[in-house]
Length: 250
Image (cartoon, rainbow, N blue to C red; front, side, top):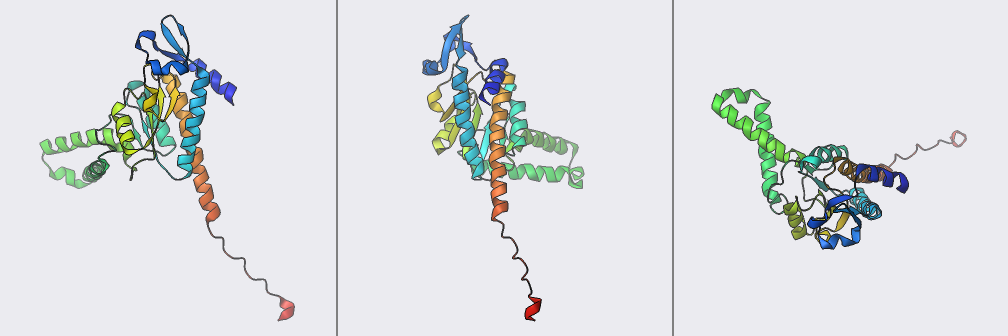
């Protein structure tokens, strides 16, 4: 398994870091060389970090926990939405709203407003409003849907946060750390690995590299959720077998 994964990661360019002038010295343990003024990330460290992250994500999912996938940069948003939806986990792919975690009650109330707007738009009630009001409601709905739809089914704080580029998502990392929520992140050579619980060193700007890393995490989560469903099925009480009537005894 490790060899094919290593080849796929290398082919995706996961080992290409940023210019050496932009590096964070704390990333030194994950860098193996500098070529043409670009730092090269040790793919062995990428795989090691990825396997640790997958193991943890699998355990969280296996125990029924939630992992919030976060990636709002252009290269990551589509992949984050697709893979999080595939493993049935919440996601933020457009914009991180301040207080998403630390003021979660307010976010839940906004989700209630989103559902209210959907009900209005899907009924005849919308026609009863003026054209100006209809336009305002539709505009409000589109904005809220874009920012909140991925968290629609997140009824409680997540047990884990998975982030693409903690520099870009510094507010998300800060809120998670404040609440003691475990963080997993794909980190490039300009990031501070000490801010993340489970760093995965790698190119956080390459679309193909991001796709592989996120898909691997989503696979681990999906596997954990499958194990939960299987264990629940095993725990379901089976009907007692019908008593065998001994006809000779009658």
